[in-house]
Length: 448
Image (cartoon, rainbow, N blue to C red):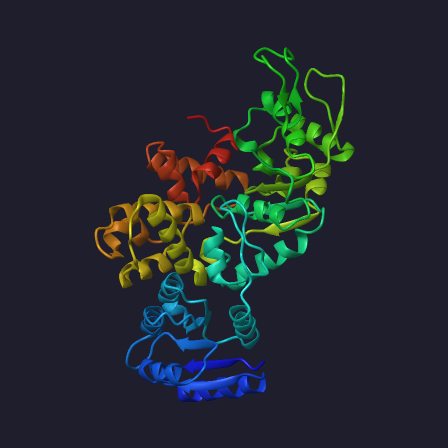
């Protein structure tokens, strides 16, 4: 059965090109150049889908969306907009738009989203279970509790995730703190055939080397001082599922040996036990360190590196995803509104410009914290620079040089001197996060 589409677009040339292309694709196409004309077409014709520009001569696409809601006319609507108006497009999705597409329009992407809108798939998600990538729409992402983004870097990242997830390959995630490495690890698990089994996450950076074997493999009661009961290790807890080792570069050399043996033999022996337990886990590891340099310095085993690095997946920093900044800002605003019981609508123009112009050294984690604080402080409908704080107006901090140990160590010492040994301020001055600074202090044996 032929589906009908209403194009609401005041750019006559673009509207005609779109109409011609959709007609060739088998759609019955109506056109309107304003909200008022669109309302007349909807009243007179059967319309299955609306493609509406955001900015129109009389009103905008959001007004048309509100009118449809008021009239209880459930016609799916896709907003067409430039990247400068993405915040408004996200607002339209909150009000019930099916999706949005950025101009210049990618024909294949538009057709895919149109088909999804015309044949909706029920999305069943929980906060810890992202929607299947087959849904694809921004609305499904919002409902699932995560956001992919529209930038080229984001699209490549999730394309690789979808490729590697169904395999049993060990994945090494490389990225700065705050870029969402654990989220990617969890998504790989959810898209794998192991998604019905456990997902276990271990922070290797916070684990004392004396307790590492117990954390990984478990222990028997009385195996050492303080072992008052039996403990099940992460390998056994994750059996059949996925084990995520964050900041794996922080493991001591002797623990690396134990980990390599467990991965090779797929058997573990709890501390204090004579029996080995067979395990079947899929390993995902993450680091913000250069492990190849660590190998050269003798701090990381090369054989372990190759064992965990069957597929390396770089995680882009937020500053590399400029098109996604306002999308994530609105996404975190929605989360903050729910958590704080607030009803802030969005960001004013100056706040939006500051968000886009900032260098985000702390990546998504930093943005989430800043926006949650701003939402709490906001007393008006839109967040302003006052709530965001002066931090976003500061020029980009110089990134810590990685040329050689002496240069890097001297930069750290100078930053600590300038900030009176305040680690948080020193990390900000260096353009790195606190966790990376702590790792560097440990690496260069800088005691404070």
